[in-house]
Image (cartoon, rainbow, N blue to C red; front, side, top):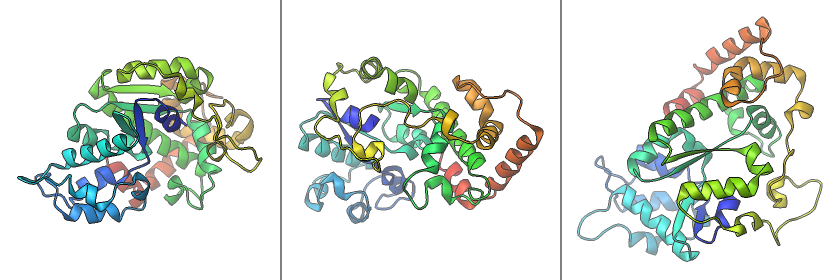
Length: 298
């Protein structure tokens, strides 16, 4: 939703998810140890499953390699962003990739002037969204503990990501890091969009909230994304859609962060057995290779 809102601004284009941006750099695929690109990078880019929607072919990529001396990875990707924006007649280009919340420091080192927007949502609603996603394996479902206790697993995954983003963001300062609450965005969309534009140094554009016009579809089987709905409150409501057991277990695992963010808990004193279970699941995740890999990506 936020991607579509910002992309509707007359001056901003938002690229599709691009997990490969920090990944190729970290693994030095088509990149020298000094951070300079090689021609092999183009083949790695074209092989990425989500690269096609960018509509940037090999010929255009080759123009970014540099002639007299190799281009840096940062300059090469910046050139790609520029091409994406030029094709859409927009001067400012951003990217929406959830996993970047764990890569803020890497991205900041590559682009010291980049600005980061961190969209935060009540973790219990995030759990519902994850639990009901139309995917065979939601990302959090890759963890071994998901089958036994999805609520605790989701709570700890939410906690990990939110804390990664906040810790890195607070080190950047308010000129480069901006927190936006999902709940406020859907209820006070115009006000929040105006504030976001101010952070980005751009004028507010009313077309941001018209992103869905002419695209909205009806159908009970369509989710909000597929239906192209406008900002709509109540699409997930943990108070009515989440079992008491799952709520209690989620709060036992991530209650401190809920408190920190101002999200009210059902109970401030989780049952001892729930705390013990949360601690056990946390210990299991710390030995889960998928979890360790995700945690190390910071």
